[in-house]
Length: 261
Image 1 (cartoon, helix red, strand yellow):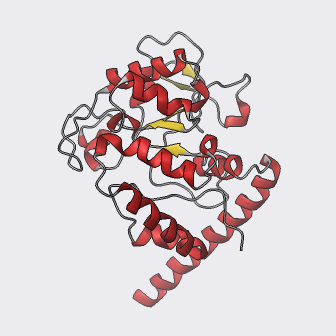
Image 2 (cartoon, one colour):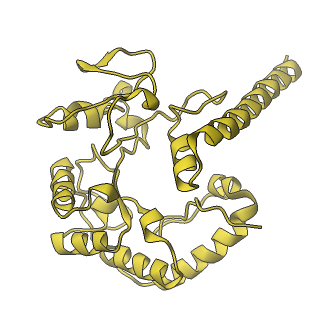
Image 3 (tube, one colour):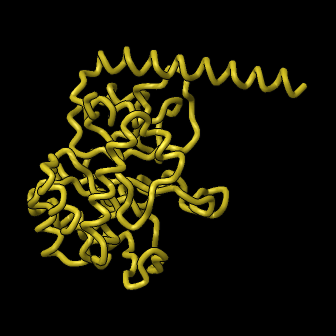
């Protein structure tokens, strides 16, 4: 059985839950063995040294670093030299804590969270050093208090408060059903964007349609790009898979409704 190229490995300071293990399916035992080796390599390493330790481990096992993403960079790297050295390995770096301005970090009391200003400075440093293609920008919406209805920034924080606060380049928001976002022309699908895109910021809600979901489904693009699959083939596979999943869920809900009533 061939191991897929896209597998999520648990955070070194956490362990995968039941849901994460379920998603791994037939490849769970492969990831479990890999994680066991990784956690042994990281045992006793301080939080501040986790990135370099992880990269060294990945290099030892022959990982393809340009096809690897390390997340939560802003709470793992704290000085310019370390950031440059990490980028020089070829690994992709994800800044995904935008909107977090509290310095408290429950998983590592010896680490202070940085704010958005520090994140932007780090990204600027990487761009100036020629590492634009290795930057991934995201926004974790992992608690209710980060949603607008509970007083948080909401899913538009990066676009509204970061990109529109001084950025002078072109922006191409993609949002079905909207003609403009914050005064900027919006596009229905990613494929409708007329120009080359240098950097994509993906922000999406937890909920959404499962039936025939593809072009605006962020995982569709992760799935096709990380498996070197052409978009046409991806459309066929993804559309069929999500259609089957959607119909099954509708049928399951109907069965539960009939039984319950």
